[in-house]
Length: 112
Image 1 (cartoon, rainbow, N blue to C red):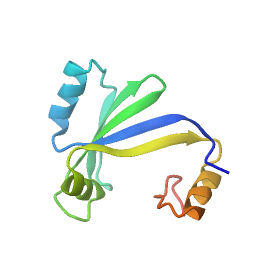
Image 2: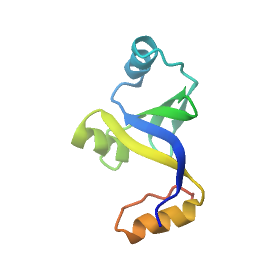
Image 3: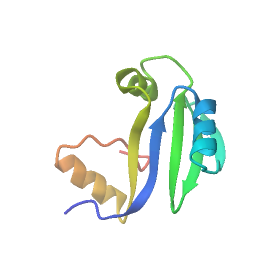
Image 4: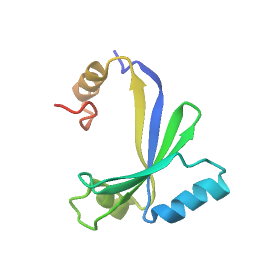
């Protein structure tokens, strides 16, 4: 079946220093920062850069706890690519298809 992707929604890059990363992506790459945000529940700070119809999202953990998924990613792999999110026609069907194929998929739709 496949996931019937219609576009890349966003790409997430995990970083250790959000200020430095924002500076790199604005000064070196010439991207325009749309906004910054923080999610206390997820333990991250984020910066968003629109790129065409997609978004580049930089994320930095706000805690050093190994229970923080972004911190674990950084500890394992260092800074860099973290997540790719596709736009799909039917999120529930896409998740079911991937899980049936043995993929680990986090909860993208807000429910199990």
